[in-house]
Length: 109
Image (cartoon, rainbow, N blue to C red; front, side):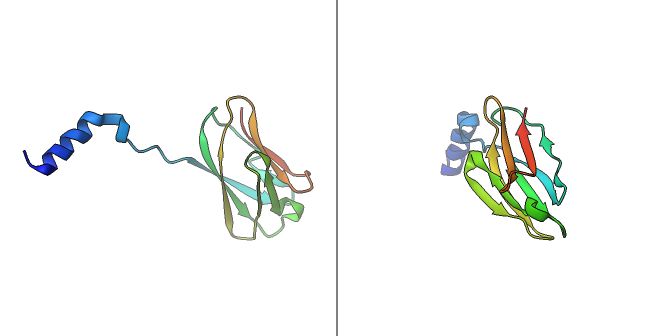
């Protein structure tokens, strides 16, 4: 048996042990002066997501985004995106808000 066939057989026998983890779901959130759109994102407990904040021309204080669960602070810019990876907790939600806590949003149940 050749080395390549042995390796293939090993991979087939190992099955899911070598399976790649699925990529996190990406959710685009538009940042405006009126807040975040969408404001609430439905997600399952334990689900991994990447929040993709897209800046617009007029964002007011909403451009400064704080995700307390991950201790992340980012700033949205007009026409650009900024990404924040999160994992939904077993109960509750991941919240995000502007630094003044005027614009708010959440991910989870």
